[in-house]
Length: 165
Image (cartoon, rainbow, N blue to C red):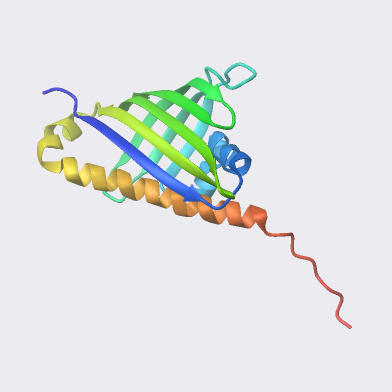
């Protein structure tokens, strides 16, 4: 039984400047604060000054009753437009973020081309492929909604209290 292969393209249209969206995406260690599907995201090894070669350990909790864990190494970085990584672990393959300024907002495209390495996922792939794709979509939708909230909170001015009088 071979590994099941998946290719996903996710598009987010965000009403925030590209630099703010870029910062939120490259600061993956803060993802669990705003992305509900991220159980854990930590740095395993630092990369060079630009972040190239950095290795992150990421665990996703999904809508279906399982978690997915993999390590991803930054293989290409061109701020604030492109960020690529190579995943190994329970998923193996590549992820590519592409950001484009659009009107007053940012268009984000994420390309995720991976193979599953867990035996049970590969055994079930012929009958569960649509469920796995739905699950991926739910994870990414939760990321988009969380990022919208995160960016909106950062855009609001700090609260100031007026003295009672």
